[in-house]
Image (cartoon, rainbow, N blue to C red):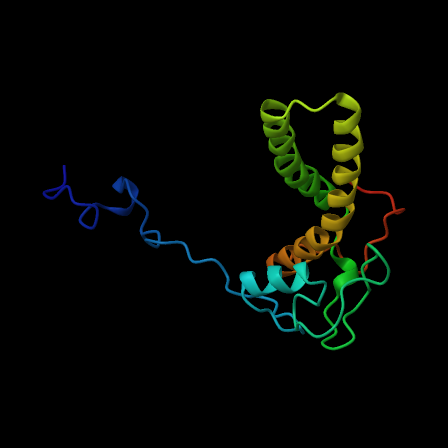
Length: 166
């Protein structure tokens, strides 16, 4: 029986703890890919996207048409075309327009009680107008958010290529 029960006093075969203690805190590798375009603060990226300008530099434009995103910013070269902001902007727009129109409808119905034909004439066109007016700024802000967070598809990826999940 050893005279000391501390781990450093025990023989190698009697040790309960490894010879080399584990580090106290695991440090991940700090290899970060720096983008080749400017990366501003989140608020700046969102604001520029809302205005339809490049979220990265604020000079170029995001859209080529109503909702088609350009491949690259003409000013800074940010790869806006690889940002996949296709599905989220309509959902955000629906939620936003719903939160604007539905309370107004309920307040109008409660206080004025207009006939249903008048409500249809007012609320349906207003809902369509707000949806179409807000979809582009919301998509721009979404592109800004995704570019800021680095959520982009791989430039080399081919959507028609088979995937190996094994």
